[in-house]
Length: 314
Ligand code: ADP
Image (cartoon, rainbow, N blue to C red; front, side, top):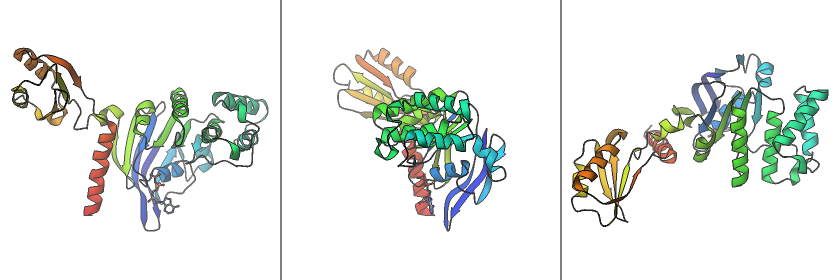
C-alpha cells in the first residue's frame, strides 16, 4: 500500500504540494491528473525518494520514505518525467548498470534482463547508444529500468508522453497487464489514458486534491451526464421542445441541426424512461435516441477552472 499523510513540498515561497493525503492499494492503477504545474511530478518525486517532503509523510508498503529510504526505494520502480537515461550507453549497458544497482546478480540478473528486453521489445536496439534511439524506444528503455527488479510499486511520470498512437497503445497494455499484483501511479494530462488504464483518478491543482474518484464517477459529475438526444426522422414536431421542457427533472432543452433535440437533466438524473414514454404517447417518429455518459475532459475543465477562479479571488 502507498499512504501519504499531509504530504507537503515548498520550493522557497512556492507551495507546490499542499497537504496531500491519499492511499493506493494493490491491484489499483491510480491516475494523477492536473494542469501543468499542479504538483504531480513533485509528488511522484517525493514518493520515489528523489525529493524530501517539507512536511507530512509518505509510506511505501509500510516503509517511510524519509525514515526508511532504502527499503522504501526497493519497493519502487520509477520512471521520471522524460525518462532520462545515460545517452552514450547502449540499452544493454544501461540496463545491466541498473540491474547491478538493484542488487540483481548472476542467473537472476540475466533472467530479469531477458524478461524486460522481451516484454518491451528492445532486442533490435540493445547495442545502439540510447542517444540515437527514437523517443518510443527511449521511453521503453526507461520503463525497462523501472520494472527490472519486479517492484511492487510503479511510479510512472507521463509514461506515454511523446509516443505515437501505436506505442501509446502498447505501453497502456503493458501497464494494464502489470496491474494485478502491483500498485501503479501514473501521471498524465491525457484523459483518454485515464479511461484506458486507471481504476481511480485524483485531480490535483495548485498542489491540492480537488477530486478523487473512479473515472466513471467523475464523468457522472458532467453536466452532460445522462443528457438525452432525440433525432427525429423529419423536422422536430412543433410541440416537442415545450413538451420535453415540461417533464420532471429537465434542466434545459436545446434544438440542434439535423432534426435533433438535446435534453439536459437537472442533477444528472436519468431522463430516458420519461422521454421514451412521451415520444410513444405523441407518436413521434424517432430515428435515433442517445444517452451521454459525460466526458472526463468536460469534468476536468469544470473542476480545474472552478479552482482557477477561486485562485483569482484569493
Ligand atoms: P506538474 O508535474 O503537475 O506539472 P510540478 O510538480 O513539476 O507540476 O511543479 C509544481 C510547481 O512547482 C510548479 O509551479 C513548478 O514551477 C514548481 N517547481 C517544480 N520544480 C521546482 C524546483 N526544482 N524549484 C522550484 N520550483 C519548482
